[in-house]
Length: 199
Image: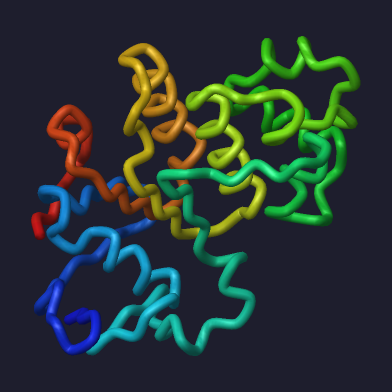
């Protein structure tokens, strides 16, 4: 794949493959084109070459959000209930499944402290979430989506060491059946990846 912004080539002849059950890192310094690759996988910009999932070009995949789920650097929390913030990823899930995923992403203590459980309002104008809590909400959405390919853009950036470690262990556990591409410039994250591709 080659990628450009306004005829300026940003990424040239990138080639990589991610298998189910594998965590692969796309690494490199800031400004090298990692976010451009993320945008192309999410079908936000055009690309030259081929991007496919299970042999199907991404442009041909219907209901793409059920196949690819992304946890980006900034997870948006809507000013609504916990239930609605999570069901954005999958409208058919039950309350029992929501509580289960809250436990899976290690938000049990946070959830128990909420005044109205799944009906509690969260968001910018109500209860602020920490960086780690916000990242876990993003990961919970990805789990609920049941996507087969998970894209994680700097999943531990701006987090303290303990929170980053907990989120990384969580990623390894909850996405063990998926193909996972981790986009990062953090050397500490590189050391935990099974395989890396440099830009």
